[in-house]
Length: 304
Ligand code: 13P
Ligand code: SF4
Image (cartoon, rainbow, N blue to C red; front, side):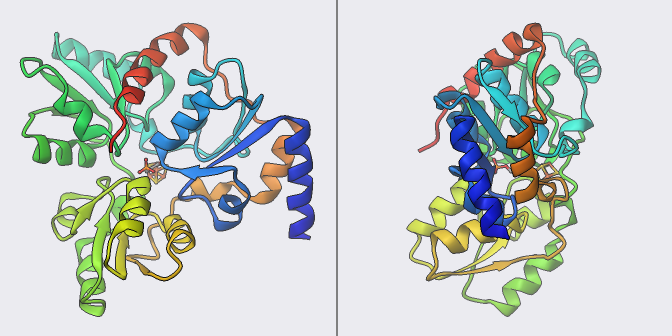
């Protein structure tokens, strides 16, 4: 049955001249049928460069919107139209406009986990892969507003020494991970290295060895001479890590670290999406043009 679905997806993909992009937090089955899996930066780059006519985005809405902003001539499909990112919805354009008024002259850096309208009001966008490098490049004499993730924002402040005005947004999935979970996993796996996502809170970050985006986790684990890792992020990445490094051990820090929105995409929904060309994600042209400027700045900073 499943292979039948996979064959149908493959057929339709050819007919629609489609490419399937999947985030590292997607369920394993979806990752396995994707043409490319990756983190927010890698998938944005792929969306901006593809010559496919249709992009099926297996992720959450802001990711599909980013693809639509970068590739306006393509049809971008989100297989479940309700797959959103609660963090991205923690700040809207009106709230950002108010904050900007309070800090005239400040540069606005928005995390890619934002709506197109918020990107359009920002000076540059970043992902967890390039946030440090991007902030380090900003003029030293300008105030910086960073939205919406207070955890990634504080991590940037700690690492760069740049003070920033933060918005109190957070990822509800990473917030479920507690320092106690990390300490327990460390006690059970004393030889393992702790790799964590910077969306985790400060107590969790403090007891981790390395803070990395999901794409950086994959590269780091492959290059490292360590054999065992405690993985402190959404559990979908475990599939990607085990596939990339079958000879290494990856211990998920908490079974509670599940992003329900990422898990809404299934093989069936990918199939229906290609059959019905649904759900198309578009961005009004005036918003798209302004949001594109922020995203172009993000794509200029490619971490090594
Ligand atoms: P990255 O894959 O870019 O590290 O992002 C994590 C995330 O929360 C996506 O929603
Ligand atoms: Fe949003 Fe967190 Fe889910 Fe990523 S993991 S999509 S930041 S809720």
